[in-house]
Image (cartoon, rainbow, N blue to C red; front, side, top):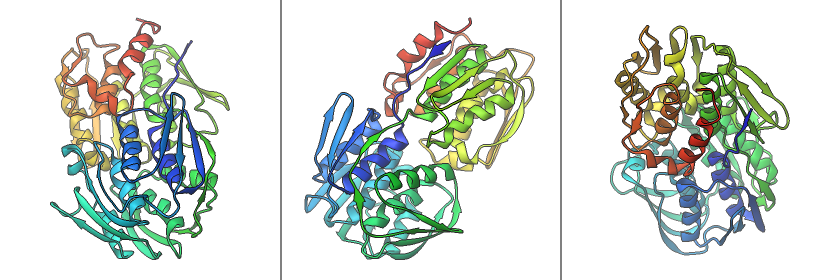
Length: 413
């Protein structure tokens, strides 16, 4: 059995940084993820005048319920979607002139529904170039609150940003959601807000967030479930066994549900309070699966699908087309490079294993960390796989290749 220590969750770290900055008092975050995305978020907070103290195992943030400590700032959000969507929302609750920009990759990703909702709440927000995309400028004067309608069908991060904002408004928020993707990520947000002293109420499709602010705390960041998916998939695909401690029955992240997909394919899965264990049985069955709620793990499943006994069809993942890249097409193109038959539609992909084994090829990463980490799993059984940009994993797991190399030596050949 191989025990793998997975770095902290990106999703949880980003939310915790926002909550800590907004809370009254000093918050300590234990075992935060240290990656390009989260370092970028922390750097953005510093640009806005928040104090962020770092030690190897913890970050301390001095909260400012009143908002940024500076009257103006220019914040570069790098590639981070959480940084690019959460920090402008945080700044809007303060007072000052704040400009936000991001990498070319992040500039392409949509912000429109969040921008419209903030404007509907009275925020003076202007996109400097393409409407609904970075760069943007906010002339902040606090947010009154009230009722707002939001379409979160492209990204649950739009809803999370507004939920996080709610307690910082003068009246609180009533958010009426017309569509929602990746709902488990919203549950992470609501659970974490509770830990920082705020109770969100849900009335059908309306989320009710009270005013009154957050309370500082000590917060432990759990391991990243999306990152763990590559190690669980490695066990299932090779007949090995992998245990991830700290990611068990009490986990906040919906992406741990990926192990249920592996169980349906034939792997043995055990989850308890201490962690989760996956053991490959030598069998991977084909299946049809709806991955709307765990779409970040779609590439992980696509990468092991060529080893299944029948077709693997992944449905309701149209939102993966507006991630770091068009992940549906990226997976399809790379699988075809390996000689695997693939079909795609607007929101689905079907991988059809053939009688011939996949062949090695260079994987085109599109600068997307999840594409590289997923096809590293394929490489456990297909010799000759390489990557045009292996370093893009620094976005969420700078030490991925070293950790995966160590795992390779402990799995059946």
